Length: 113
Image: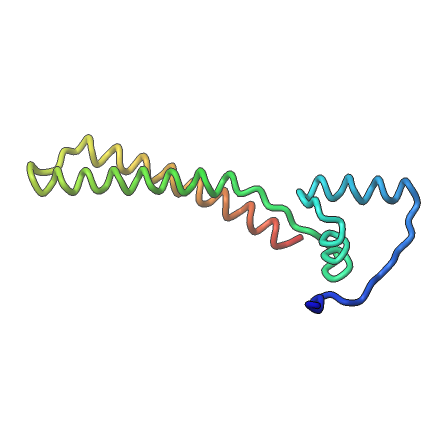
């Protein structure tokens, strides 16, 4: 028979209140496996659950800006560049860098925990 990676059994008794609190914290961390949660807490002392929605939004903004830049480059190579197009690009890039700054500040706050 295949030997298990984790072959030592650890048994811990808890009260019903402690059990409920453990499962509540598991739900908050998005972990369904009790063994995985207990191991993570025992070995590391914390579980970090990061909401990456701001990063996904940032990637979307970056893609739009890159697409705009490619369109302007094609247009510039064909017809020349219009000042209004450059102004729109500058506005988009300013928004992108504001979002980057916000996300970096949030990540820095997480690291300080």
